[in-house]
Each structure stands twice: as structure tokens, then as C-alpha cells.
Length: 437
Ligand SMILES: Cc1ncc(COP(=O)(O)O)c(C=O)c1O
Image (tube, protein in one colour):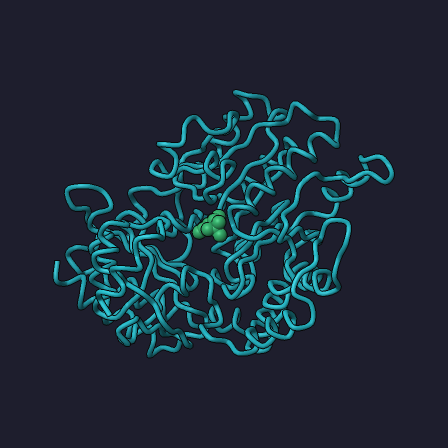
């Protein structure tokens, strides 16, 4: 088996991976069900990351597989350019029913990165439709992750994701991140740090509020380590955006679909943005898909600005609203509703958060932040940033636990179906491995 693997591994250039090490010691997943994976050797591995924050309802949901199968047998593909298929409209209305406020118009794409770039284009198209063509700047934040396309890379606040890709898009400025030294071992929202939102006001004063199209934030900064917004922070961003007609975009690619306690973090923190980008758990990870939910008035302004019989937004993907992805999405939303998974996650989160914060006595653990059904565990760095996180991820995997490490932060996000026993198993393996350092 090892020989076969070595022979067949050379052709794939693996994304966001230490390719040389991986090909020496591959970690291959072969099967998944419920809260578990099995690797190619048959070892059982608890999934402490919902795949990569995708599989909120756990793995191997037959309802989703059957819905995709049925759809593919009935009609495998049809374009959404000047054509349509009923299931896409049904899915859009199901998504709109979950989003807050007037975010009732839904544009489909295929990944979180595409959702972010699409939202940037919609913001620019909206500026233009309002006769405000000078509104072309974007505000983002340090430590932000908004995917890997060129728009999202420009918004990104993570140096390794930017540094070899040239100067990127012009006109993007970054607010400070919200993590403060006193934010140690916190469950839920920190009490301090709301004043970081004033950075947006400083950009308004420096560049002119009427030159800024949109402010993008992850309501909880996910990939960088689950930085929960300080109390009042998102509300203040909303106020400043309102005062200067800047669109507020929540990138909920990780936060969406129950991760923070409600369907969207916008509802958890009671702040309604103008657009929400979503992906991952949109289809429970079973099909690649993303969506951008847009406030009615934005849609209407863009659409009504175009001449009759003219395309209003020159944007879209071959696989926008792919029928099989829509089928997977509807089946996922059915499960979330019927199994009351968002409520279940919210009920389980105090137990989960306590279990994570209890790991604070382990010497290698530097900090832990927990909110909803997700936690970021900072590990004391080794000689080079990221080395310890990578080493821990590999050791945890060998000990039977899958999580996602970003730099030296271990991200834990079990599926919303997790029982207390699963959470105990996750914290048990974490303790066992992290105590070896
Ligand atoms: C907040 C956020 N935006 C965008 C993305 C990019 O999504 P994708 O990897 O599907 O392109 C991610 C991925 O983790 C994310 O966390």
C-alpha cells in the first residue's frame, strides 16, 4: 500500500499543504460517517473540525446524497445565464428565509472565495448604479481571511496569504484586528476593544467616506483563530457605515449555519449587514457552493439602473446555482430545520466552551477563545511561526483527531450533532497530545 501511494502521489499539487512532508507521510481520508473519518489504514479519527467547518450535520448524510443523486438523474446541468431551473429559485428562497433583515436576494457561486469577490463586484456595481462611481475603496481588517482569489487576497490580513502575490488590488485598507492582550481564555464576547471600530472612522476621515464602497469583516474572525468581536464592536461598525452610506459585508463563510449559535452570526450578535457571504455548511460540504445574500434595495438599484433588455450585472459562473449543489443545499437546510441543529449547537456550546477553556493548564497552551461551537487554541510558538501548529496537527492526527491548524492556532469546530461524549473525546485527545510538549 505504501509503495502504491508513493507512486501515485506525485501528480497532485496539494493546496495549503506541506507537499514534501505529506508525500513522505500521507494522511489520506478514506471514509466518513457522523462524527468520524477513517484513514486509508482503517484508523478511526474523530472529526473535530467538521471537515473544514463544512459538515455541520455530520458526515455521510444519506438525505443529501439521495437528493443529489435524484437531481443528477433528472437533470445534471443547465446554465443559469438567461435560463434557469426551478430548484435554484427554491433554494434561493430557502436561504433568504434564514437570513436577517431584508437580505432577500441570493446570488450563487461555488466557493467562499468566489462569494467574496462577487460581493466586492456587487458593491462596486451598486456604487456605479447610484451614480457614485468614486466609491471604489474597500476596508478590511488585519488577520482577516476572505479566501484566495485576487479580491479576497487584497482584503486578506494574513501576511503569508499575500506576500508573494504582488501588490494586489489597489484601494484596500485594513483596520486593526480586535485581539487585545487582555483577551485571555475568554468564552463569548470580550468586554474590551469596541474602540477598534473607530479605525473605520479614521479611514472615512482620511479618504472621504464617499470613496468607500464597502467594509468587509468576518463577524468572528475564523481562520486566524476565532477572534470573537468585542461587545459593541459590530454595532459601531454598523453605525459608521450608516453615517457614510458604506455597505457592511459580513463574511460568514465559517460563521454561517449555526456555528455561532444562530443561523448567522448577524443574528447571534444582533447586527444586520447589507450583504452576507456564505459557503461551507450551505451544502453541509457535500457539494461545492457559495452564496451572497444581498439587501433588496441593493438588488433593485443595480437591476433598475440598467436599460431595458440589458444584462444588469456582468458577473456569474458556469456553475452558479448548479442543480446538484442546489439539491444538496435544500437537503442540508431540511436537516438543519428538522433536527433543530442550530438550537442543538447553541445548547451544547456552554459544555463545549467549558471543555475547551479547561485545557488552559497545559503548559504549551498560550490562550483559548471559545464562542458557540468553535474555539481557537493558541500554542506557544516553536523557533519559526507555524511549526508548532503543524507539528501538533500531525501528532493529533496520528492520535486519532482531525482539526485545522492555522499558524500556531488549533481550530476546533465539531459538527452540531456532537454529543457530550464526542466533546469529551476531543478534549481528551487534545490533552493527551498537547501535554507531551
Ligand atoms: C471567512 C472566509 N471567507 C472565505 C473563505 C474562502 O472559502 P473557500 O475556501 O471556499 O474559497 C473562507 C475559507 O475558510 C473563510 O473562512
